[in-house]
Image (tube, rainbow, N blue to C red; front, top):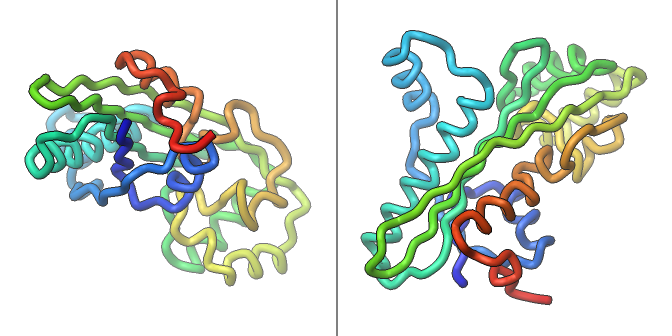
Length: 215
């Protein structure tokens, strides 16, 4: 069965590959800030973190699903969309983008615990049949070591790794040594919860092993 990942995230791609799935990939055409701003303006409130990531995961999956349906009517498989953000003391921390922001983020996070929220949306596409969707949010708490030094933060930021990931950290690369504890599914923190994804796939009538492209 074909699997199309509606993301260009190297972490999500790696995660699926490690789980035995070799997906096709497509970049969703979604203006994330505009989508969130429009929904918040319409509802007159600020979206909670779980609502935020689920909204964007669904929009990304929907965009790619609509595109592949139009361009490849014979597509038989699933489309996976995801979005993640880190919450610390009620504040949403996305990608820092600049070394200055990443440094300030790490100074604030060391010795503390936050929550990584990950939204998931899956579309089941079949020729001649209406699309079916399933979605869910997973969360995991992340505790950072209190003894991370300023020099270690500077070196980590200089590596470039934390600049373009939610929360300014990874657990599966250089940042993993600075994380003391994770409560919840670790793959959630990488970028996509595999148990959650398996549950959504099963909800849509697809057996998880059918997605494996290798044993």
